[in-house]
Image (cartoon, rainbow, N blue to C red; front, side, top):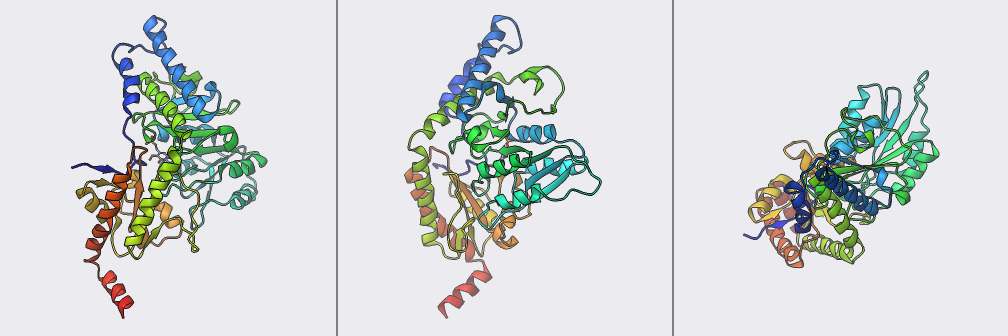
Length: 403
Ligand code: PLP
């Protein structure tokens, strides 16, 4: 059976060109990038070439890139590296667990954490951040640093935050700004100067590089406490022998993403996502897009993601039904799957627990074809109808409509 992969926000397939770029660094050029001999120098040159490729994607200096083991490490490095007891962090309730739980951990270490919510479209308010930045501190407390961490694109809904405006407000108040750009990298153009962020996290496996690779952009002049202690790798910012092959793959994937962003690829992907969304909603009643305001307007989103609710059924049941028909999608975020709690992102947007549990995320790779979109669109209404056959609430609402 030809499978249709619509779970790119969980992970993406390695591109053949990325595999080819990496292959020699597993086999012939296996040197340690810190060794003085030629094999070491060869590995070092490959790491520095990849650093340049990633710096080009982000429009930053090569020296501002730190290679990590992925998005989770980059987020933790930013948050634990910036904040000390007595400091203050402002973040949001819709972050990925990598930020959410790191921030939660900080509260037990004497860091004050302020949480911002979002509106029904999933957007964080610039005014709310401004107010939080000027909120009175606990009398007697003398916090030193304030940092703000707000994600660029949400992993569940794809909704983009107004990062340039948020970072400008943070800087006016003297705060340092971090953004988790894991779900935006390679999907939208990113210029760290335009975004105005001081730190930015990326994960390789969300952009066709291998799992276990990532970067943290650290603007020149920003001081971070290291997360690990050991060798002096990555300019003493991240101890541990470099994952040379993985870094080479990440660099190649960044180069390919940069080239794709300069084509009509993003428009094509947006059109296919919209076709799927509209096609499904035209054939399924009592369903909608998570992130649509009451007047139907949607917040800006990355091109590949849509998150839909279908009343009178469980999202997980639809995920399983579609899986049996050869379509891979996700209910809530992949990292939270298995959990019975409704999505923290969707509930923050105001969905009740029932509707949050009745939601499914479709996230396409750049390789998705129109035929696959058509096939998914044809299969979905019947799958939803089948699940609803078992639902007493759907029967009641259908009866109410026909009466
Ligand atoms: N941040 C966001 C927004 C994510 O979607 C993810 C992964 O789903 C991460 C961070 C964690 O990245 P990694 O899987 O590379 O640790």
